[in-house]
Length: 452
Image (cartoon, rainbow, N blue to C red; front, top):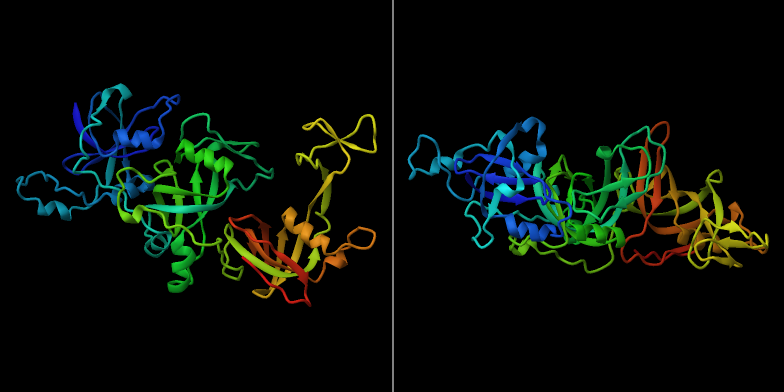
C-alpha cells in the first residue's frame, strides 16, 4: 500500500501523485458514468488530499517526446512547494533538491477504484501546488513551448472544427449532457470522433482594455481549441448548449506556440477550483460590449473580427430564399394538401397564410483597411433584411444594382479563409456577439454612424 498526495483530478480517469523523491505518476481508474457528482464535488473529495492506494500496476512509462500535455502539467508543479528527499543525501540537506531538473519520465499506473481510500477530513497536503491563474494577456506575453496555464475567460463565440480536408458536408455539433465527461460530441457525418474538435473564442478584461493601451498588437479575442478528450463539467455543457456566451474557468490548458489547447488533462468549470483562493483567480467583469479588432492584412484565418465596407457586388450564384413558418420559424414547410395557395407547417399543425421569407446572401465589400483585397461576407438574416429593405423597388422586388453602393458596418465576422494567390481574398461569415448593437446600412454618399 502506498500513501500518495493527489495533485490534480480530472474526474473521469486521471489522477496525479507526487512521491517524496520527486517522482510523478499518473494513476488511472474508471468512474461510473452514472455518478451524479460534478467535477467540483469530485475535486473537493480528491484534490490535494493524501490517499491510500493499493493494487497498482504499471501500464507504461511516458516520456516527454510523446506526452506534451502531461509534462506541461508536471513542469507547472516544479519545483515542489515542499523539500524533496534526495537519495544519498541526509534528511537535513534539502537545498540541493531545489536545483534538480523536472522529471523526464512518468509512470502511468492503474488501480481498481475500490482500492483508493481518501480521507476527506484531512487537511490539504503540504505537497499540493494550487494552479496559477493568469490573464489572457499574460499568457500571450509569456507563453512558452508546451506551458500549462489556467485562466478565466468569457466565451463569446463557438464553432465546430472540421479537421479532415476531404470532408465536404456540414456538421452539426451536439453536446451530450446525459452522461459525465470527457466531453461527448455527436456529429452528423463520417468524421472520426478522435479527429473532431470545436473552438471556443474567448476574451477577458486584459484583452479588451489593458492590451489596447500597453500592447496594441495583442488581439482582443483568442480561439481556444477544445478536443473531444477534454474534461468538461456537466454544468458547463448545459450552459454551452443553451447559452452562447458565458464565463468559464479553464484549468490546466496547454499553451503551445502562442495557441491555447484543451486536451485530456484540461478541465472546464463554471466556478474556480475550491483550493484556488488567490485574488487573481477571480474574473474581472467586462464593463461594456465586446470589442474586436478590425479586419486588416494581419488578421489570421480562424479568428473573429469586425468589418465595414461598401457593397460592390453580390454573389448571385449562391443567393436564394425560402419560406418559413411565421409562428415557429420552421424552414421545412409544405404545400397545403387541400389549398395549394397556402403552405402548411407540420410543427405547428397550422396553415401558413403569411410565411416569413429567409435568404442566403453573400456580398463583396470594398474595405478601406484592405483596398486591394476581395472581401466576401456571408450575411445573417437581420443584416440581409436591413440591406434589402433599404433597396426595395416600387413593386416590392429587389435588384442587385439597388444594393450596390450601400455601406455596411459594423459587422462581427468569423474569418473562414485567407488566400493570397492568385489574388488576395478573404472569406467571412457574420456572427452574433454579446451586446451587439443595431447596425446601420446607408448609401455611400451619406454620413454613417457606426456602433460596436
